[in-house]
Amino acid sequence: GESVGLHLPTLSVQEGDNSIINCAYSNSASDYFIWYKQESGKGPQFIIDIRSNMDKRQGQRVTVLLNKTVKHLSLQIAATQPGDSAVYFCAEGGGADGLTFGKGTHLIIQP
Amino acid sequence: EPEVTQTPSHQVTQMGQEVILRCVPISNHLYFYWYRQILGQKVEFLVSFYNNEISEKSEIFDDQFSVERPDGSNFTLKIRSTKLEDSAMYFCASSPLAGGSTGELFFGEGSRLTVL
Image (cartoon, rainbow over all chains, first blue to last red; front, top):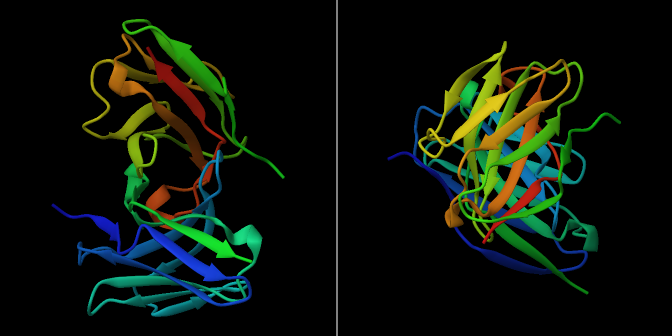
């Protein structure tokens, strides 16, 4: 079946470095993708989204890249800070049924 | 900043008991959702609700589950007869538009359900 999934369960980076979190999707008809951040004990928090007619979108310290050819999505976080420690989920927009989430990547920031 | 609020934050119940989880979505939002997250796993869609009726539901959302918007502010999830495997964090979310249009679902902090 179609799914949204993440390549790595854990990513450890040094504070100040850039982080890149990857996501693969299998539904070629998907046209909307979102990254969520979930801190421990909290609900998912929207970070950034991108539509399939774009290949890049930038926010504050974050950039999402979409490669439709290989069905790959990535989230880049510049100058990673301790507050960026969280689990990051990619999700696919699914119309009335909201979102289909991937498994999550735990980003750990090393001092 | 408006937010989605959920109660209780944690509920412990015996297997077979009924549980009601409550949510107050953001006031001008039109779409409401319940998701669940089993410990260490991904967030899973349960049900979406719009215009006082269910829009979509997943295979997880069987006859033991029901949702209701009893008044203009609350949105509840009822589990009629809880099973051990219902133990999870349950997230309520709301959106001004259909989740697939904008993606920006606003999530509550979650209600942790522990079934013994």
